[in-house]
Amino acid sequence: MKSKTLIGMAIALFFLAACKKESPKVEPKDSLELLKDSASYSIGGKTYSAIGFEKNWTYTTQSNLKITSGVNFNYLLEGDKDSLLFVREYSIRAPYTNIAISFIKIYNKNETELTNENNGGHLNYPINKTDIFSPGLYKYSTEFYRSNSASGIAFTVINQQGVYKSYSQSDLSKPASVTQLDQKDSKFEIISLKKRKSGYLLEAKFNVNVFDENKKPLKIENGYLRLSILK
Image 1 (tube, rainbow, N blue to C red):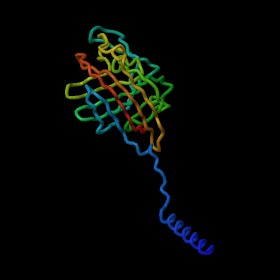
Image 2: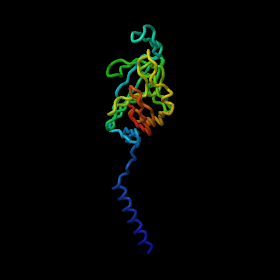
Image 3: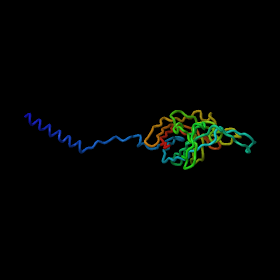
């Protein structure tokens, strides 16, 4: 009786070992690498989801611009010679709506280095390439394309009604059309920036007020963004 039991156990162990050989171990996939770019937001109670993304621009321009001479439309502008404004811009395409999100930061020139990252051209790129995407809360730069005097975030929205912006008109000889007061209830928060095999994955949530040239408002709410940052 005892020998029959031992034989039965041996047979069971044999089949168990055979099953293990036939079923190779499946290595878990890295879920971070599988996540795709995604965005959603609401306008007027209607929810929009992204159908595509584009990296539009990486560029630098003068910062802290001011009028140095002239009157009305005949004036000269001068920027800060020791700093520059660095911009990374991405486009979210949704049905009947396109949103360009600009990440904006003023850098001292000694915090940058000359590279050829801009389609073969030369560009003063920040030495710390991810600093502009650091997790945290960000203000909306209402002086973008105007005096370029503040770091932050800017939105440009194009839909069937026209073009809307989170920032002011560009003419420095006129009062600002959009100010920080207009964005007092707005919020942009980078929740996380995670390293991937190639680049990073950024997550953010947001709401913002945008305005057309007549200052007709449009409110974007419940915004969520997941975006691949390659450089």
